[in-house]
Length: 336
Image 1 (cartoon, rainbow, N blue to C red):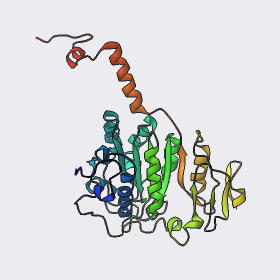
Image 2: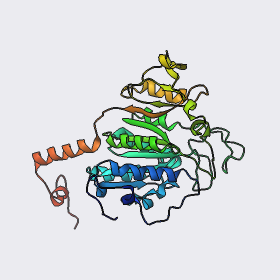
Image 3: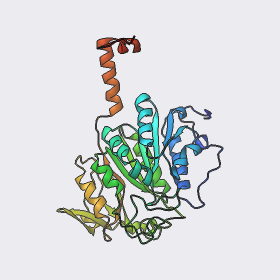
Image 4: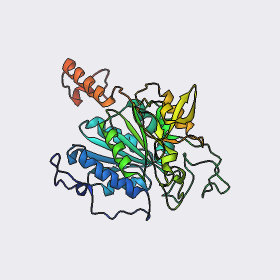
């Protein structure tokens, strides 16, 4: 890793660009995400040598090769375990985990929910393209029913995960969504994830031009997205539309479209996640706009902080100790 320009406030995007050729398919949404991350990190006020990027397996997981930071390209589904270890052992580091929907939600699903449960202070970005791209187009845990793929030639029969709902159900302390076609919004969400103390989950609606092209066009296509998205902002009304003349409100246990003046205000600090769960699942209905932005941001105990406090307390009470004394403690025996 190059260490030029590491003084706080002097970093630019160039400091996070490597000499490696970026090898994704032409038009892949990963390019836009990489650009947004490289433009966000210099603005966070963190020394460059404190950043670590950890990835699993998949197209998105080439990310560490293209980031001029410390990095670790791990194994399928295990990025969360490695990222957790990095953060717990080195709590001063700024850790970013990069995973795809298959890497994180299928083989890595168990690590995903337990990293959320522990509330380790790291940032997870899921590139959700609703397909396995690296292995040439099999259906994934987020693929829509009926999708014809290499592994579902007559259409997928599986019911998909909603990544936001999974994160909320596991009680993540920060949950957000953005899209690869909205660079300004991506940067804003990445900065908010960094500022959050605890586990920060960010879903990116990402286009795979080869195996699932235009899968999110009904949400992100420029000519319609103002009418198909509602940007959740804490303490502000849920309004949308090119003229911000439409709104969303809670009505009992359901959602409904209304006039902007009648829209419910969004509360990202609602601890039970009930409203966040309702809106993330309600948006699967055609007449409700898809929520973007920050669904949840609450405070919870952070695991690595509690671990280091516990170790410090034990050390103060029992002394530093040595490996030899640990091995010789308790019941021991000699083998002749």
